[in-house]
Image 1 (tube, rainbow, N blue to C red):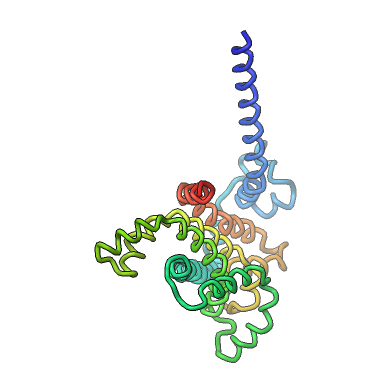
Image 2: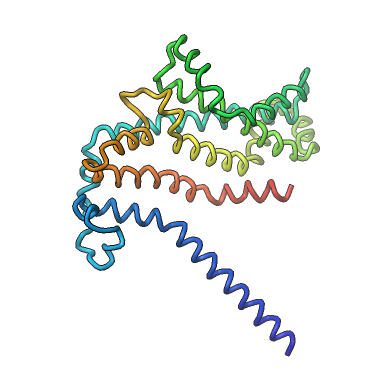
Length: 283
Protein backbone atom coordinates (compact mmCIF):
# COMPACT_ATOMS: atom_id res chain seq x y z
CA UNK A 1 0.00 0.00 0.00
CA UNK A 2 2.81 2.38 0.86
CA UNK A 3 4.60 1.53 -2.39
CA UNK A 4 1.47 2.27 -4.40
CA UNK A 5 1.05 5.60 -2.62
CA UNK A 6 4.68 6.49 -3.29
CA UNK A 7 4.33 5.68 -6.99
CA UNK A 8 1.10 7.67 -7.23
CA UNK A 9 2.75 10.62 -5.50
CA UNK A 10 5.75 10.43 -7.85
CA UNK A 11 3.49 10.32 -10.91
CA UNK A 12 1.46 13.27 -9.65
CA UNK A 13 4.65 15.25 -9.02
CA UNK A 14 5.95 14.36 -12.47
CA UNK A 15 2.64 15.42 -14.04
CA UNK A 16 2.73 18.73 -12.17
CA UNK A 17 6.27 19.37 -13.42
CA UNK A 18 5.24 18.63 -17.01
CA UNK A 19 2.28 20.98 -16.75
CA UNK A 20 4.49 23.70 -15.29
CA UNK A 21 7.07 23.29 -18.06
CA UNK A 22 4.33 23.34 -20.69
CA UNK A 23 2.88 26.55 -19.28
CA UNK A 24 6.35 28.11 -19.03
CA UNK A 25 7.03 27.18 -22.67
CA UNK A 26 3.73 28.68 -23.82
CA UNK A 27 4.42 31.84 -21.82
CA UNK A 28 7.89 32.08 -23.41
CA UNK A 29 6.39 31.69 -26.90
CA UNK A 30 3.63 34.23 -26.30
CA UNK A 31 5.56 37.28 -27.63
CA UNK A 32 6.57 35.33 -30.75
CA UNK A 33 2.98 34.27 -31.39
CA UNK A 34 1.82 37.85 -30.87
CA UNK A 35 4.42 39.15 -33.32
CA UNK A 36 3.43 36.53 -35.90
CA UNK A 37 -0.27 37.37 -35.65
CA UNK A 38 0.48 41.09 -35.80
CA UNK A 39 2.51 40.56 -38.96
CA UNK A 40 -0.56 38.90 -40.53
CA UNK A 41 -2.88 41.85 -39.81
CA UNK A 42 -3.38 45.08 -41.72
CA UNK A 43 -2.09 48.38 -40.26
CA UNK A 44 -5.64 49.56 -39.59
CA UNK A 45 -6.50 46.39 -37.65
CA UNK A 46 -3.28 46.69 -35.64
CA UNK A 47 -4.13 50.28 -34.73
CA UNK A 48 -7.70 49.38 -33.81
CA UNK A 49 -7.15 46.39 -31.49
CA UNK A 50 -4.64 43.93 -30.05
CA UNK A 51 -3.32 40.86 -31.87
CA UNK A 52 -5.51 38.53 -29.78
CA UNK A 53 -8.54 39.87 -31.66
CA UNK A 54 -7.74 37.44 -34.52
CA UNK A 55 -9.14 34.58 -32.42
CA UNK A 56 -12.61 36.15 -32.68
CA UNK A 57 -12.11 37.68 -36.14
CA UNK A 58 -9.82 35.36 -38.13
CA UNK A 59 -10.76 37.14 -41.36
CA UNK A 60 -8.23 39.81 -40.37
CA UNK A 61 -5.37 37.48 -41.26
CA UNK A 62 -3.64 38.37 -44.52
CA UNK A 63 -0.26 37.89 -46.18
CA UNK A 64 -0.17 41.36 -47.72
CA UNK A 65 2.40 42.54 -45.19
CA UNK A 66 4.87 39.89 -46.31
CA UNK A 67 4.24 40.88 -49.92
CA UNK A 68 5.14 44.45 -49.03
CA UNK A 69 8.15 43.18 -47.09
CA UNK A 70 9.52 41.39 -50.16
CA UNK A 71 8.99 44.59 -52.14
CA UNK A 72 10.93 46.67 -49.59
CA UNK A 73 14.50 46.83 -50.87
CA UNK A 74 15.81 48.12 -47.55
CA UNK A 75 14.58 45.12 -45.56
CA UNK A 76 15.45 42.45 -48.12
CA UNK A 77 18.88 43.99 -48.66
CA UNK A 78 19.45 44.10 -44.90
CA UNK A 79 18.73 40.37 -44.64
CA UNK A 80 21.43 39.69 -47.22
CA UNK A 81 23.83 42.00 -45.38
CA UNK A 82 23.12 40.17 -42.13
CA UNK A 83 23.91 36.82 -43.75
CA UNK A 84 27.13 38.20 -45.25
CA UNK A 85 28.19 39.32 -41.78
CA UNK A 86 26.96 36.42 -39.66
CA UNK A 87 28.16 33.45 -41.71
CA UNK A 88 31.83 34.57 -42.12
CA UNK A 89 32.02 35.78 -38.51
CA UNK A 90 30.76 32.40 -37.28
CA UNK A 91 32.96 30.28 -39.55
CA UNK A 92 36.11 32.27 -38.78
CA UNK A 93 35.55 31.96 -35.04
CA UNK A 94 35.01 28.20 -35.35
CA UNK A 95 38.08 27.70 -37.54
CA UNK A 96 40.54 29.89 -35.64
CA UNK A 97 39.11 28.91 -32.25
CA UNK A 98 39.44 25.20 -33.05
CA UNK A 99 43.05 25.55 -34.20
CA UNK A 100 44.01 27.71 -31.22
CA UNK A 101 42.15 25.46 -28.77
CA UNK A 102 44.01 22.41 -30.06
CA UNK A 103 47.33 24.24 -29.86
CA UNK A 104 46.74 25.34 -26.27
CA UNK A 105 45.56 21.87 -25.28
CA UNK A 106 48.16 19.59 -26.90
CA UNK A 107 51.05 21.52 -28.42
CA UNK A 108 54.11 22.64 -26.49
CA UNK A 109 55.42 26.12 -27.25
CA UNK A 110 57.13 28.86 -25.22
CA UNK A 111 54.82 30.80 -22.93
CA UNK A 112 51.79 28.62 -23.65
CA UNK A 113 50.24 29.03 -20.20
CA UNK A 114 50.85 32.77 -20.16
CA UNK A 115 49.32 33.18 -23.60
CA UNK A 116 46.28 31.22 -22.49
CA UNK A 117 46.02 33.35 -19.36
CA UNK A 118 45.94 36.39 -21.65
CA UNK A 119 43.09 34.82 -23.64
CA UNK A 120 41.15 34.22 -20.42
CA UNK A 121 41.76 37.83 -19.38
CA UNK A 122 40.23 39.03 -22.65
CA UNK A 123 36.95 37.37 -21.68
CA UNK A 124 36.22 40.16 -19.21
CA UNK A 125 36.94 43.02 -21.64
CA UNK A 126 33.60 44.68 -22.52
CA UNK A 127 32.85 45.46 -26.14
CA UNK A 128 32.14 49.10 -25.34
CA UNK A 129 35.76 49.69 -24.34
CA UNK A 130 36.98 48.92 -27.86
CA UNK A 131 34.45 50.94 -29.84
CA UNK A 132 36.38 54.22 -30.01
CA UNK A 133 39.92 52.85 -30.61
CA UNK A 134 38.72 50.28 -33.13
CA UNK A 135 36.70 52.96 -34.92
CA UNK A 136 39.86 55.06 -35.31
CA UNK A 137 41.83 52.01 -36.46
CA UNK A 138 39.21 50.97 -39.02
CA UNK A 139 38.99 54.53 -40.26
CA UNK A 140 42.75 54.65 -40.77
CA UNK A 141 42.89 51.37 -42.73
CA UNK A 142 39.65 51.88 -44.68
CA UNK A 143 37.50 49.30 -42.90
CA UNK A 144 35.04 51.66 -41.25
CA UNK A 145 31.46 51.20 -42.49
CA UNK A 146 32.33 48.01 -44.35
CA UNK A 147 31.10 44.45 -44.02
CA UNK A 148 34.66 43.22 -43.55
CA UNK A 149 35.11 45.54 -40.58
CA UNK A 150 32.01 44.23 -38.83
CA UNK A 151 33.09 40.63 -39.49
CA UNK A 152 36.57 41.29 -38.08
CA UNK A 153 35.16 42.95 -34.96
CA UNK A 154 32.79 40.07 -34.23
CA UNK A 155 35.54 37.55 -34.92
CA UNK A 156 38.02 39.27 -32.61
CA UNK A 157 35.57 39.47 -29.72
CA UNK A 158 34.23 35.97 -30.27
CA UNK A 159 37.63 34.28 -30.26
CA UNK A 160 38.52 34.50 -26.53
CA UNK A 161 35.43 32.56 -25.49
CA UNK A 162 35.83 30.14 -28.40
CA UNK A 163 39.46 29.38 -27.54
CA UNK A 164 38.68 29.02 -23.85
CA UNK A 165 35.76 26.65 -24.47
CA UNK A 166 37.40 24.47 -27.11
CA UNK A 167 40.74 24.29 -25.32
CA UNK A 168 39.05 22.90 -22.21
CA UNK A 169 37.04 20.44 -24.30
CA UNK A 170 40.01 19.24 -26.36
CA UNK A 171 42.12 18.82 -23.23
CA UNK A 172 39.72 16.09 -22.06
CA UNK A 173 40.51 13.88 -25.08
CA UNK A 174 42.49 10.83 -23.86
CA UNK A 175 46.20 11.29 -24.43
CA UNK A 176 46.53 7.62 -25.33
CA UNK A 177 44.24 8.14 -28.31
CA UNK A 178 46.42 10.93 -29.68
CA UNK A 179 49.62 9.02 -29.05
CA UNK A 180 48.20 5.99 -30.85
CA UNK A 181 47.41 8.16 -33.87
CA UNK A 182 50.94 9.59 -33.83
CA UNK A 183 52.40 6.08 -33.72
CA UNK A 184 50.36 5.30 -36.83
CA UNK A 185 52.15 8.15 -38.59
CA UNK A 186 49.57 10.91 -38.25
CA UNK A 187 50.98 14.42 -38.26
CA UNK A 188 49.49 17.32 -36.35
CA UNK A 189 47.25 18.43 -39.21
CA UNK A 190 45.92 14.93 -39.85
CA UNK A 191 45.56 14.36 -36.11
CA UNK A 192 43.56 17.56 -35.81
CA UNK A 193 41.26 16.88 -38.77
CA UNK A 194 40.77 13.12 -38.33
CA UNK A 195 40.71 12.73 -34.53
CA UNK A 196 40.22 16.00 -32.67
CA UNK A 197 37.57 17.63 -34.86
CA UNK A 198 35.22 14.60 -34.96
CA UNK A 199 35.46 14.20 -31.18
CA UNK A 200 34.96 17.92 -30.64
CA UNK A 201 31.97 18.16 -33.00
CA UNK A 202 29.34 18.70 -30.26
CA UNK A 203 31.35 21.48 -28.61
CA UNK A 204 32.06 23.14 -31.95
CA UNK A 205 28.36 22.97 -32.88
CA UNK A 206 27.36 24.53 -29.55
CA UNK A 207 29.88 27.30 -30.04
CA UNK A 208 28.64 27.88 -33.58
CA UNK A 209 25.07 28.33 -32.35
CA UNK A 210 26.13 30.84 -29.68
CA UNK A 211 28.26 32.81 -32.13
CA UNK A 212 25.58 32.82 -34.82
CA UNK A 213 22.89 34.06 -32.41
CA UNK A 214 25.17 36.73 -30.97
CA UNK A 215 26.17 38.14 -34.36
CA UNK A 216 22.71 37.89 -35.95
CA UNK A 217 21.00 39.70 -33.07
CA UNK A 218 23.68 42.35 -32.58
CA UNK A 219 22.75 45.96 -33.18
CA UNK A 220 25.39 48.02 -31.33
CA UNK A 221 28.38 46.96 -33.41
CA UNK A 222 26.36 46.99 -36.64
CA UNK A 223 25.03 50.45 -35.86
CA UNK A 224 28.57 51.82 -35.52
CA UNK A 225 30.69 49.85 -37.99
CA UNK A 226 28.30 48.63 -40.72
CA UNK A 227 27.72 50.40 -44.01
CA UNK A 228 24.84 52.83 -43.54
CA UNK A 229 23.71 52.17 -47.12
CA UNK A 230 23.35 48.40 -46.56
CA UNK A 231 22.78 47.89 -42.83
CA UNK A 232 21.99 44.52 -41.21
CA UNK A 233 18.42 43.64 -40.31
CA UNK A 234 18.62 44.89 -36.71
CA UNK A 235 19.70 48.37 -37.83
CA UNK A 236 17.21 48.42 -40.70
CA UNK A 237 14.36 47.61 -38.32
CA UNK A 238 15.56 50.25 -35.88
CA UNK A 239 15.40 52.79 -38.69
CA UNK A 240 11.83 51.69 -39.44
CA UNK A 241 10.87 52.27 -35.79
CA UNK A 242 11.43 55.98 -36.31
CA UNK A 243 8.49 55.91 -38.71
CA UNK A 244 6.47 53.30 -36.84
CA UNK A 245 3.11 54.76 -37.65
CA UNK A 246 3.72 54.56 -41.41
CA UNK A 247 5.71 51.32 -41.67
CA UNK A 248 4.10 48.96 -39.19
CA UNK A 249 3.07 46.69 -42.06
CA UNK A 250 6.77 46.25 -42.89
CA UNK A 251 8.15 46.37 -39.37
CA UNK A 252 6.06 43.51 -37.96
CA UNK A 253 6.86 40.86 -40.61
CA UNK A 254 10.49 42.05 -40.77
CA UNK A 255 10.89 41.62 -37.03
CA UNK A 256 9.31 38.17 -37.20
CA UNK A 257 11.63 37.05 -40.00
CA UNK A 258 14.58 38.39 -38.04
CA UNK A 259 13.47 36.34 -35.03
CA UNK A 260 12.65 33.17 -36.94
CA UNK A 261 16.05 32.67 -38.58
CA UNK A 262 17.97 32.22 -35.27
CA UNK A 263 15.20 29.95 -33.98
CA UNK A 264 15.45 27.77 -37.08
CA UNK A 265 19.23 27.53 -36.67
CA UNK A 266 18.89 26.63 -33.00
CA UNK A 267 16.27 23.94 -33.51
CA UNK A 268 18.14 22.54 -36.51
CA UNK A 269 21.23 21.96 -34.39
CA UNK A 270 19.61 21.41 -31.00
CA UNK A 271 20.74 17.78 -30.87
CA UNK A 272 24.39 18.77 -31.34
CA UNK A 273 23.92 21.59 -28.85
CA UNK A 274 22.52 19.23 -26.21
CA UNK A 275 25.35 16.75 -26.86
CA UNK A 276 27.94 19.47 -26.39
CA UNK A 277 26.39 20.69 -23.15
CA UNK A 278 26.05 17.16 -21.75
CA UNK A 279 29.57 16.24 -22.78
CA UNK A 280 30.94 19.24 -20.96
CA UNK A 281 28.85 18.43 -17.90
CA UNK A 282 29.98 14.79 -17.79
CA UNK A 283 33.61 15.69 -18.17
